[in-house]
Image (tube, rainbow, N blue to C red; front, top):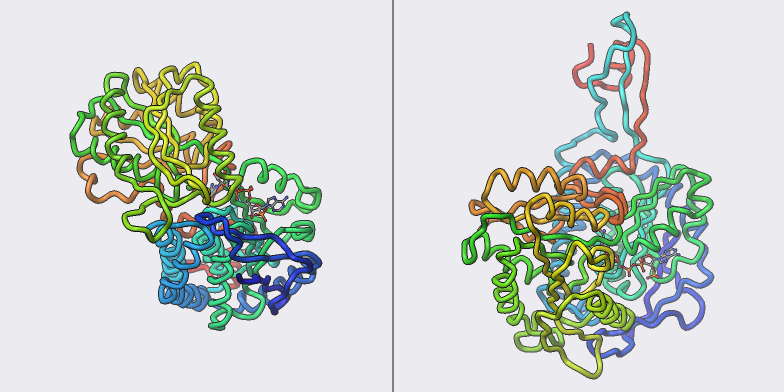
Length: 515
Ligand code: NAP
């Protein structure tokens, strides 16, 4: 059993007492312990602001990018060791562990190369500006400089590597030091990633700190130049954004929360066509990958009424192929849920969906006895317009509900009942239907993926978050936005309008084409 420590104020520190127990989800055995009791988070945030901030701001984008590239290479080199920790601490088969760890390395590499492209500047180049009055001398520019505080990142249990890296990459490239706090249940993998990065001395002192365990009073120390990026449940998100000091100091908060993501098969798709097969493969993957514990997993599947029976048959056939069991065992593609609480919640969620009329179309097999295993479940809700739970309750496990719809307008209306999602996936080739669906679903979604014939063999899986595209969603998804290339940096930068003599400002601000 390993005792995890936090890295604060430039040194490894252990909390008081026995601490929280982290369990192997396949065996329920305690594999690690961690405590943050008694740790001085106020001092840790000050250290990051005072040491990490200036050191990062003194570097150019290219230099910060080079650090991210080095972090990426290191995680890639250490991949096998990290996969092993992922299996023990999160119950992930190799494929699921790679999804998390390669996602971390890939996102760091992407922002590394973005830093290289941004080059020698230390802050983003101003726009070309605008004439503000009748005089062509009096001009206004907007400049964007890194906040002088610290970025505190609070992450969910389901992506201990990627969740850490996707947030850290963006903040570090922007020039803001990071304090990362993984969810306690799976903090071991984040600890292993951070420890390797710190041991390799890639980053300046104070640029990266780790809170391994409960948050304690960490967030009470946030001040006006700090930023809080949170991923987790909508309920915790609400608590964090309404903390008195967060409100008092207008601390920037980004929330990535629950999401009832949808898949819509557009009218005109034929059973057995390439697009249909893509739809079936994608839904089965989204339901079972990471045991359905993915914020981008498909929860609601809408098909034209006349295709409901075909969708049931083909999805069941595909889902049957997923063997559930202990990671590493022959043929196992899906592992257990991560915690005992997750198992309780998922089983209760399935019951709640069935209590309002959803029928069980498929229930797979899963090991019984020790371990937090649950079977894959496909439900069918024949009356989606009357049902409410299916549009509001995020069952965070290997569960999806199939529903019929009549006409594109109703499909959009049903998707919108989710109250805002990270993702909607649309399958089809009918241009008119696709256009209506894209434009109708976009206001309710952070991302829309269109699976059509010509990209059927090229598209990335719907649930895969790419660093070049924004990740986040309106409403219940938290109203946040992360990644999206350069867009993501703006959360960590202060945009300031600077007004004055155009020629003077252009020189002082190093405007690329100023005159
Ligand atoms: P959670 O219970 O809300 O916990 C998330 C994080 O918040 C953990 O690090 C947790 O720490 C911390 N936390 C909880 N209460 C806190 C408090 N009062 N002060 C400071 N920190 C606090 O969520 P989860 O169960 O880990 O994650 C599952 C949820 O995350 C799902 O609903 C899923 O949809 C969502 N999710 C969303 C995205 C996205 O990008 N939108 C991505 C992944 C997951 P401890 O673990 O130490 O309690």
